Every structure is written in structure tokens, then in C-alpha cells.
Image 1 (spheres, rainbow, N blue to C red):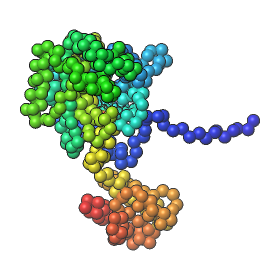
Image 2 (image 1 turned 30 degrees about the horizontal axis):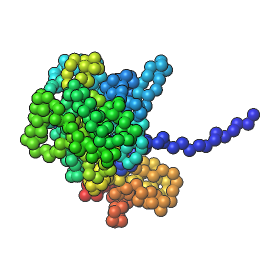
Image 3 (image 1 turned 90 degrees about the vertical axis):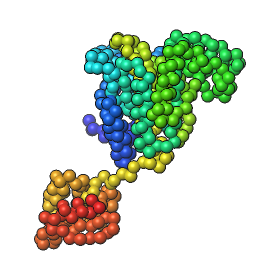
Image 4 (image 1 turned 135 degrees about the vertical axis):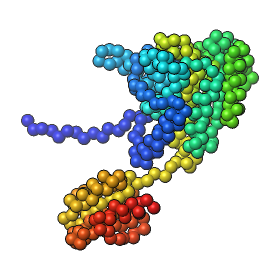
Length: 429
Ligand code: HAM
């Protein structure tokens, strides 16, 4: 039987995921490095947590009634028929890690940074993807408004040091669960009376998770909310004084903010302080470069002691979009500084020169295959290198090689002994 050639099929990446290539990779890595350096400077060393967890962890912590759990999780059964989920966010895994390793024994607050890919089956648009990337911090174990301020200030300092200017810090408090329970009844009543014929989405929110109606985009609801009851007005003394202390702390740290009564955020574990870093460069539906808040019951819900926590996560893709819009993306060097070309039977000595340069830490590429010098120079131009080293047969007999500055076109000769030094002079300039 004759063997059929395999059918060639082009398979593209699934919707909402993408590749990071070239200069984007460099900027991406740089952003990540800077974040983890900043976090470490503030006493938040990096930990690495898994990309998937037991589904139950997210259902219980993020909350059954949230959009994330109801509509957006990538959940699958493994070979042992256990239900696992690709993490839609990092806080649940960090708290699970804290509890699993009894990290409360290591001194409180336990402070740590984390990051990596997160997965949510969302409607894809600019700044909203199905695999996206976050980095963030969590501080677990101490109930002190000053710790809320530290966490908020860390994210703010990082974003400002990137050079972002069109940045607004939004803060709010959503109180304790019992305070919220009192509020949501009054709120649902008010909205239903003020807006007859409520949009099915908002009706569903009122049924399942009434606070989320504060996120409504229906102008009638927005208007009704403006005159409606405010959560802050039903808070008890403790919640009020915690929030007051957070605002005082931000004032003392010189961090500008806006109190946003509608900032409830889409995860159920929050209590008291919530906050977001909004960028003026993105559409309002995706303008949060990051967000976070305080959570009181989460550690206990995950089987740990009754300790509070506070943290935030920033979205890498959105930060890069904001940096691009504000014109502060770093210039990225070409992928190498030197490219070694060869003419005639000199491939071997060319490779030796490249090996020496690489050994000395000079970013160097070589040309492969049998190509004309013209084609090799074309490749050299594309490579982004500053210097081309041309290794020719006749030059080699004289013990020299040619260096061409690819920016200016200037050529010079170097002896084999001096080639490294001469190159370093050009690329160091
Ligand atoms: P979150 O607000 O769901 O919070 O996500 C934080 C940030 O991740 C967002 O502000 C946004 O920049 C980015 N992000 C979220 N979803 C997407 C998406 N589909 N595509 C692109 N970027 C996205 C949390 O995840 C909490 N765990 C934050 C936290 C930490 N709270 C306490 N500690």
C-alpha cells in the first residue's frame, strides 16, 4: 500500500491567546524583572504557584455567583476524574499555598509576590484576552490600615516609575459581609423601583450578586445609583475608621486618589478596602491596569487560621498597551551586536571568531549556508547588529579581518588579536 503524504493543515492559535515575539518579548521580560525587583525591595519576594488548582478552590474563594466562576473558567477533568481549573487569578492559589505550608509560622504578615499566565474565557477585545498575564503581591496575617496603604503604594510606585502619567487610583470600601447584606436589600429595592423593565443582565445581577449592579453600564441604572443609597453610609464604626485610616495614610504618602463608591470589583472574597489603578489610555471597560483589595474570610475559608489579607494584581498586557499609548515603551536593541560573515572557504575561522566573541559575552550571530556576500550583508542589516565582521580568504592570509560599522558604513581592518577590543569600542559607543 502506498503511503499517503500527511495532509498539511495550518493551525492557528486559539482565540484570545497570542505569541509574544521580538521586541515585545524584551519589553515584557523587562517589565516583569522591574516588577519583581520593586516587590523585593518592598519586602515581597517572589513565589511560584501552580497554573492549575482544584476547581473547588476557585469556586469557594472567587465565588459561585461571580462571572469568573459562572462563565469564564477553563475547567477540565484529569485522568483520575478530578475537576481541575486553569487559574483565573492568583490570590486563591497564594492563600492555598500560605495555608498548605503553614506560612503563618514564619512571621506575619507573610508578604510575597507572584505572577504568570491566568485564564478566563472572556469576550476578547483589546486589553481583554483568554490567556493573559498578571503580576501581583499578597500580604497576609495582619489587620492594619497601614498595610493596605503599603500595598496600594507599592503598585502605584511601580506604575509611576515606569513613567505612566495618565493614571488614577480609585479606592473604596465595601465593608463587612453583614454590612453589605444590609445594604444590598436597600440597593436592590431602590434600583428595581427607579428602573422599571431592568435589562436581563442587571436583573440577574440583582438576583445573584446585587452589589455587581454597581458595575452596570445601563445609563438608567447609573443615574439611579447616583441618587441611591451608598454603601459607605451603612457601614459600622470599625469599617469607617479603617477606611478613614487608609485615606489618611494615602494622603500622608502623597498619593493622589479618588474615592469611587461603585468600585466593588468582580471577586467575592473582598471585604473593606478595594482599589484599582485606572489608565486614561484604555477604553473604560478595560481601563484597569490592576486592582486589588482586602479579604477577611478567605484564609479561613481555605482551611487556615482566621487571618486577613490584602493584595493586588496588575495586567501585563494592559500595562504594555498603556506604555505604548503614552509613548514610553523602551527602545529595544537589535537581537545581536555583531554578525560574522565569511567569503570563500572561511566558514570555520568565522565560527571560531564568533565563538571567541560569544565567550567574551558579546552578542554575536553567524551566517549559515552558502550565500553571496551581498545576501550576507542583507541578513546583517536585518539582524539589527551594529558591526559586521567579514572574514575573507585573502584577508586571513594576511592575518586580518574587515569590520564594517553597519550604522555608518565605515570599514576598517583589525588583526585577529585586536578584533574583540575594536568591536567593543564600536558597540560600547
Ligand atoms: P482582577 O481585577 O480580576 O483582580 O485582575 C487584575 C488585573 O488583571 C486587571 O486589572 C487587568 O489588568 C488584568 N486582567 C484581568 N482579566 C484580564 C483579561 N481577560 N485580559 C487581560 N487582562 C486582564 C484579580 O485577579 C485579583 N486576584 C487581584 C487581587 C490580588 N486582589 C487581592 N489580591
